[in-house]
Length: 462
Image (spheres, one colour):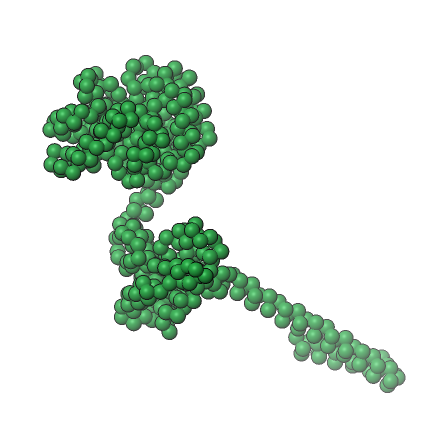
């Protein structure tokens, strides 16, 4: 840049020497021009420096975590793109939401800052610490020694077992669940994340090294495949209700049916085991519920049976769901008392005030409520009292081995006795043999459902 200005000034000076006969005039003009040229050069140089500094500041902001001043996820990805061998540890803080909810977000931020400093003190000389999202950190080891990443995971667990973060009157103890992988490219980020998810499903405060064909990876593949299949099935009208009979153990008659969603894929009947999880993740469950309602109402419009339909919390939170039911009840001339809504999710997921309010609105319309899979997950008796349900369906895991497992029998008896005390009828699921049915009847359970009674079918058989 300076050379260009000098070249320009020499040319101008030569021209002035030719044109000017007065030496003093030449000196004045030449001096003025040189001053102007240097001023222009200096301004451009300053602007360049400002731009460079601005770019550096922006670069720092883009690649640095604001709270902890650690490099962030973008910087981590940049690091992993290099070809040298690296080991990666992803550290997820166990139950950090508890810290925020009990102590508040301000103290939560303080804990994260202190964690960053404690972790930095434990990172070896060939390692770099990153904060990659809210309560997750990562450590990259360059050219790691044999088993160094596993040794580091043990070291971190031992350190935080005896260390606490102090804040005024609080001693906050922290543990991590850790996913680990090593390799030569950025695929180790995906693999370490899979290992982390696998570790979290097994338990907290543990670490897991990535293994080929992990169940998390297989499940992700399954979910990706079936989210596409569910979408196609909905678009082509291949979601169908199948009807499974429910037997009254007092009258010895089939008096009810449960409407179960199935997908027809290449002339095969697909069990919900394969598609309900992916459908939930893809946001398709409300559409499946609406199709099941519409087709089931249509099928039972000229029949006298009571029938049940599974609903989810997504359905209850859908503002249009109650109106949709009203429209279909009217359209198909179905008496509301013939319809039972089974809560598909575990009871803990419907314990919000909004969900209970919606269920009460449905009950006020005349519809009945059943709790499905009772006895598993977080089911408890107090929530059933709050919901005031008509039916309690005893989970099949207790019924299927009731002829061999004394504990299952005791649990079933307890659930049945409780149901009678709150005037709810009981339904035994997974009745798969004559021996199981005989025991179910002897325990005075009101209804039986399972393959011994009848399989789900598209058409009700006489």
